[in-house]
Amino acid sequence: MSGLDSELPDDSQQFPTKLRVIAIDGPAGSGKSTIAKHLARRLGLEYLDTGAMYRSVAFAVMVHGVDLADSAAVVEVAKNSRIHVDESTVTVNGVDATTQIRGPEVTRSVSTVAAIPGVREVLRVRQRAWAIERGGGVLEGRDIGTAVFPDAELKVYLSASVKVRAERRANEVAALDYETVATDLAARDAADSSRQHDPLIQASDAIHLDTTELTIDEVVSNLVERLNTDHD
Ligand code: DC
Image (tube, rainbow, N blue to C red):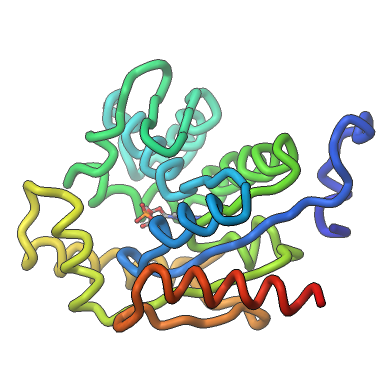
C-alpha cells in the first residue's frame, strides 16, 4: 500500500505493512452500511461507518453551541472530540450519541461540517489509523476510495434511485416521514457532491452497483466473487 506508507509512524514495524481495505462509497441510502456490515462479516473484517464520525462532530458542535459558520472553531471541536464508533453504539466524549447523531438537527448540519477541509483532515487521519490498527477493514463513506484509501483492494460505488433511498432512510428513523427525508436527502446529495474538498464522486477504478433492484445477498455475493476472482 504505497499510498499509506508515508502515513505510517517511524515505528511502523508494529503495524502490518499489507492492509486489506475495502472501500464502499455512495450517497445516503444507497445501502452502504448494510452492505459494508454484511461484507465485513463474510470476510472476517471489522466495519467502520465514517459518516457516523462526521455526524459525531456535527453533534459535538451542536452540544457546544459553536457557530457552524466559524470553520476554525468547528475544526477545534473535531480535534478535541473523542469519538467512538462501533457497530451498535456511537459515543462522543463519553456521551452516548447513537440516536441523536441520526436526528434532524445533526442531519441538516452535517454536510456543512463535512465540507470543512480541517475537519476532513482530522477524521481522515483517524480513519487510516483505525484500519492500520486492525490490518484493514471495510470502511464506508463518501471519499474512502478517492481520498482515505486510494489504494484499497476493492472499491465499490453504490447508488440507488432517489425514491428507494428516501424510503430506506425513512424506514430507518421511525420519527421521519418520507417527504421530509426526500427533501433533506436531495439537499445533502447536492452539498456532498458539489463541495470543493473530497466531494462524493465515483473513483475511476471503483465498481459501480445500482442497488435499487438488488437484494443484500446479491450485492454481497457479487463483491465476494470479484474479490475471489481478482486474487486468482
Ligand atoms: O453516511 P451518512 O449519511 O451518515 O453521512 C453523513 C454525512 O457525512 C454526509 O452527508 C456526508 C458526510 N460524509 C463525508 O463527507 N465523508 C465520508 N467519508 C462520510 C460521510
